[in-house]
Length: 63
Image 1 (cartoon, rainbow, N blue to C red):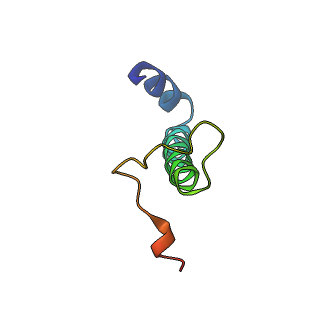
Image 2 (image 1 turned 45 degrees about the vertical axis):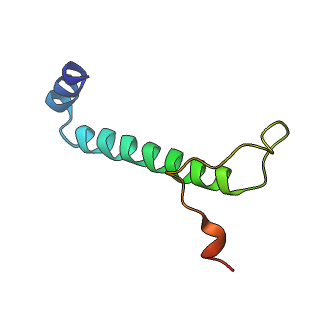
């Protein structure tokens, strides 16, 4: 990964910022999507599962 960023930085310095923002955006999208999925109705086979302790309960926020 370091070698890739070094090669990108020598050819186009702003590309490093673009790669960093893209990675940060992906992590944010996965985190928000996980919270939304765990707080939605459970899909078939997941009805009896408990919410993980690190996922906040958003039902209190919107009631």
